[in-house]
Amino acid sequence: MPKAEKEFILNYAMNRWQLNFKKNVGPTSDSIRTCNPSSLEEWREYYYQNVRSEERINNLGHALYGHIASELPTEDRFHPNLIQSITEQDCINYMHMVVINRVFTGFMKERGLL
Image (cartoon, rainbow, N blue to C red):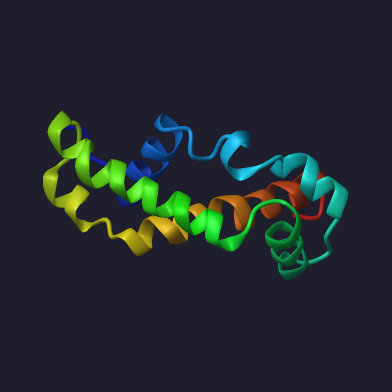
């Protein structure tokens, strides 16, 4: 089995089940350009009010956890202890981090501010 970290599995599963696709998280790139935020908090508020609700992202985190907990253990891809170490809260936090923090970081780099 390949050595992996929690984030690797979270990212793998999120992409595999397309939970970070536009149909689920909305048009993040277009939305952040429309918002043109000067702070992470400004982007967070805009996203949750205009793109997807915080509850919607929480639900995507629950779905992510469901896939990781029920489908990945049967595949023998990752060490069982690593899969079991991932909590539902890890999945919820990861979904929020991807759509808020990472989109904002990418936007700031695009603008040459990071």
